[in-house]
Length: 497
Image 1 (spheres, rainbow, N blue to C red):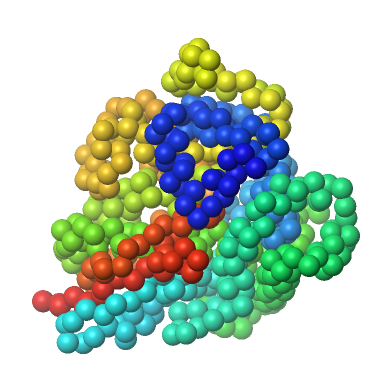
Image 2 (cartoon, rainbow, N blue to C red):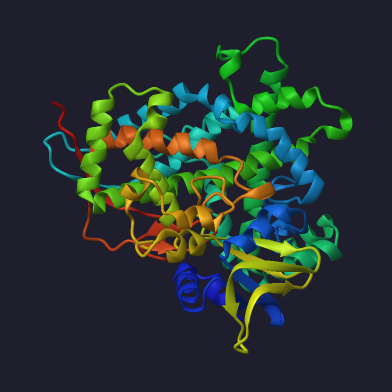
């Protein structure tokens, strides 16, 4: 198993930080049965992996196989031309201009969440302990569900439960139970038909495999329901719910555009089902964790929290443009995404032999300094997002510190010189290139809207409970590593002048 048990355990981020600090920007990782992988944070090398030579570096076999089995032939389950065709189809609905038209919906759903939270908080000015994570997850799910797909999970309601969202949340906890056999998944998919593989699963005595089968079945069944409803609205001459035709779900926009495409360029229903699953899965937990991380960091830094609250108060009524232009809110968001990206590592696989040029020479184990690395075909590269985001040679001696003020003045020249392949703020937090996060602009609006409304209404303070951060695809907070994501904070109402 090599280093796989250290990479795939609840505290893998500690291992990644440790080896990054010890060994630098290009590190050899031992994989399954002697397989050699690379953990890379060198920005010049990553520019080639993610952007310049992106056609030769795709998602690794395991990620593609898992995405295809779990969600279908969508963003995570395809590579090459099919992936790019689907991405091209969804790109227009995730532009800043299009998302701007949905801002009233972002705000309306956030205000509903704010009202739910207000109902939990004592009226006498005393603090109430609230577990932020379940509520942040429900809100994140509802924002994506309504805006992206025109589907309400009614997840903002107290005690609201939904089998689809619960199944999505169980994907990686269940996969982690099967991690020893994970490398076998791509092999089985290549050797056997889906029908035969399903039969093997049904015959297996291993309980987590049956749990995973149930998750896959639930996810597929619900995505079909969501898509069929959106398609019915898109093909009808009138909107049954009376919304403005120009401000309905992003999925409806995609369906209407898809119907006008040539047959060779049109997405199948199976691909659209998979996109629903992929976007909901990727966006819900990442959005919730980002909100939770910002609130915790503000609770740990009360002066910063008060400064932000003052900026929001002075700004008055917020519309989209005013919200996105608030400098201190923007600095807090950028600094949190730099230091604490929800995803610490993503994976790429070389589909041909290649040479990776390095921005900074590294020492090989034989003591020779090199400025490039030969990478054989099929080598897996672990894109070290957090390693690049916290590199002191790029960000300065305080790179490990959370300091929003760094964004209120010009960044050091070293940041520009690093030439980070980036979708946002010179960081790798949303990756880059042809497999970069398609919903990053959605995330900016959603997170800033939520934080602005919550900090205006409530004050957040840390409790005496120690918060642990558990690794998965998303690094999430918890009290007990064996339990669900959890972030208890003390919340009080803000007195209005």
